[in-house]
Length: 296
Image (cartoon, rainbow, N blue to C red; front, top):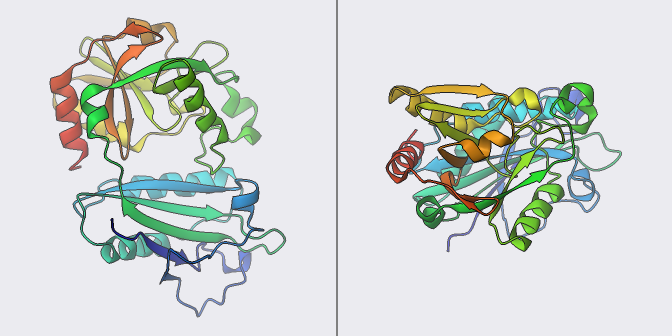
């Protein structure tokens, strides 16, 4: 197994006054991933105070990198972090990909934290390593349960301090939900709001099909705008389907002709069972989606 590639981003933000790094130093450098680099006082480690993105690189190509950088910047803004330097992060990303031995699928994680407590200097790094093989899930699908996230559908506008819609390092709730799904004999989760709207999965967007119409929950509900979902919609529109990001009631999950969870590394995974009830799987379309998402 190949050793991951680690890039330390030493000038991660645009405003140099936010950090203590000399502007004359290199903005990033490759480092040994087997050695310690993160302080135990870093707020990313002690409080999950930071943001991240995981970018799929398929056979050396990263078609969604700009969309991921857009979301990375937006997440940082929601956390009141200084704005990441797109130029530096893009160059560091390219360096990480170039430094890693060629593999069919590379997962590249970009991380920005608030830094060591009291130092007012953000910490940034990029880690590139082979992506996990989800080929079995793409074919066999996953069993899903719905779980109440505990918030109303309008929480992003009524309580923005809850950071709904930001891709933060605080994933304890998401991983707890996955454990609960497994206790219920399932593989994954679709979150719903306390007032009955469909949200997202812990690590994926939700895609529904009813006839020739495909829908996904709207990002206005305080969920992550899906980069993979947007690419899936691009293909579906090419194929002549109608698409839309809308408010979906939880009851619509059960009525849907088919369901998928879509994300950068897993791509499109069909839902074969929802809350113990079998769902129809469109295997031909699933295969076409995954072929497209692996190339675009």
